[in-house]
Length: 381
Image 1 (tube, rainbow, N blue to C red):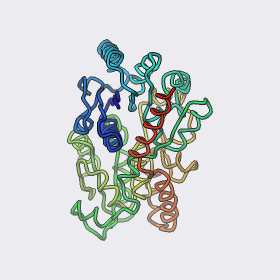
Image 2: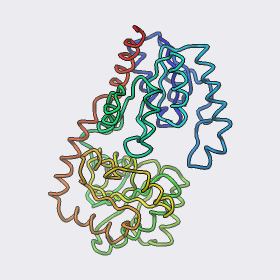
Image 3: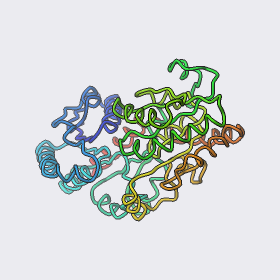
Image 4: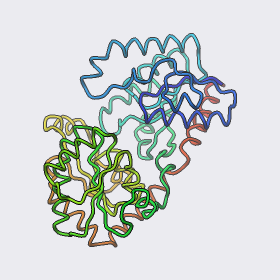
């Protein structure tokens, strides 16, 4: 069996590697080629081009890189037309992958797209292009299947890899020992995001909230983790300017340990909210962006909640503070409520555990089963 595959960033590289490993267990002679990073190449994928050529972010950079991206997509199309795979798998990167998938499917190559775009939340008209471009959509979250079913697009929910990775019952004491922090203290985690813009918009309210919490409850300790040294330094600069006396310990690339070690978490909206939920920690979700961008997003996005825990629960189980609602005193109010009402935390943990169990269905195996099933079905036609 020969598979074409394309991942556009580090998260997709990890998903692709686990999928290749699961497929190879069933098909030892599997051939895999396309674009992948270090993890996919280690799993046996022949990467035809450097994955860094797809590493673009924001609104301006993709436009500046457009000629190269168009050429890359053309070259990939030509390769797969002349070296036809039995099936092509596009992992995330929808703006790049869907155009390639559409052309490959029109050329008779079966196509699977792995990781649904947020079509259920914004740019909903993409669903019509997706319908033409793919034979099967694989979703990581259960509520994502609805829009595909409504448009009669084959879809399979395969669970979320983080739910497999994070233990169902996290060990707080083990995490604190790993971080070399006090085992019996009360810790509040500050996780203001992995992008510079997020640090610039959220560092101040997060730190000022922590300062107010420390004034109200002097026994509290605070911990934070950042994705790299640059984000660490940016947040540290705000810390030295705003709250230099706050008992805050800094870590780099230790977000999971910090979540597991915390008693409550102040976190920016995004994947970190899902991770915090899987660690069963009560949280306050906050997000701010430039005002102009916020009004555009507000106009484009149509979803009842911003945070994944609330979306997965289909109700507001944790507070969401968006834009002007992100105020230190409001954050403090919610954190104090958690600390003063342990029964609320227990109720929340019960909800989180139930969601975790729903997401934990061995994503790599489920995805491999879905790929082999659709490949077998399509190749028989």
